Length: 82
Image (cartoon, rainbow, N blue to C red; front, side, top):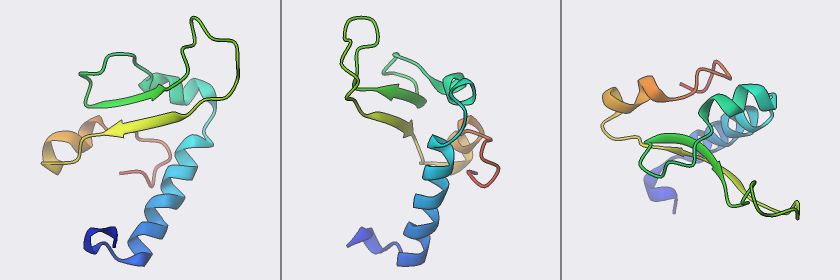
């Protein structure tokens, strides 16, 4: 379970993720992109240009390996993210 990641590490990652998604919209939009080739991007399953139903999933996509290559692209807010 959890690919060998400790329960405490999973709890901390969940808290940081919640912190990110509680940021003001303007801050999160800095990472928004519809470009699937971006290695770090905020996106949504909701088609903001066509749909009017407000029932969707937002997600933050992060590449993680190798860390030294991708961590500089990661969000700097909340400060605990990196």
